[in-house]
Length: 319
Image (tube, rainbow, N blue to C red; front, side):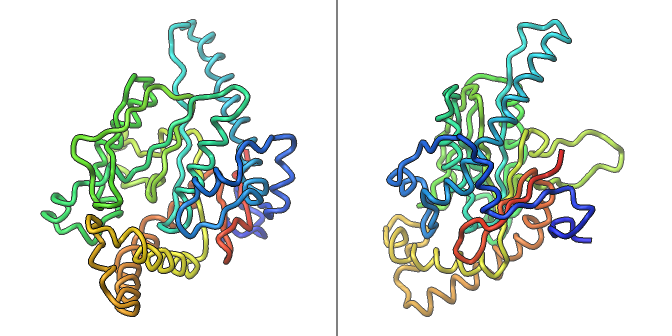
């Protein structure tokens, strides 16, 4: 049984084509300009205003409904417990999916759209990259070729961060990662101070981990999420996008002498492509198959992309 097949009668999801989904925008206003979209999208990601209209305005409207429902439930719980001093905790949106599939663009576009709702909520965005173990530790434990796998993260720090957010703590700090040096920046942090909405983006944020046999409570990252999104595409498409992005970076960011990947910019095109294929096959494809893709069905909403890197189908979990 494939519960993600639109024809499967027992699927927990409802399926919509991009055109059907776009109709749910209703009167949601377009608050982004073409220049802003260009600034927000990642390298080789073709998302434009038309894609925002087709997919993201309807998604923004849906998320607005979920946030409002959460706020209503919070007020009802306040009354139930007669606890008016309880502080409303942020609504957390988790975004998962493979490398090169477009998570960062989706996260940034959503952040801007949500922050421009009429209520002007405070919206923050944090990625899991900063919670990767420093390269020094990864090398020491022979994990450099598993960077991005679940065991390459400081899981304790991830859980403490999300627990602090969900406990409405002030000034919760998240470590910062540099894609230039390919490492966590020592002593540098992003401070999150009670936003209305937090978008938490990373390849493995829906990873459940192992369940204890003794029934003790073991928290997973997704336990702190109010809504989870998975960005999906066929394996071969993601492979093509990854290689294309690598080759483009070879001509741009990798040319910076401070870049961790600077050595790749000195190679011939064929040699660089061979390196990219090896990184895909030995690291990213393994991670996708072993850890990322198995979490897809844990999402509340799945955005499935087609050949042109644009969303073709939306799967929304039934209530």
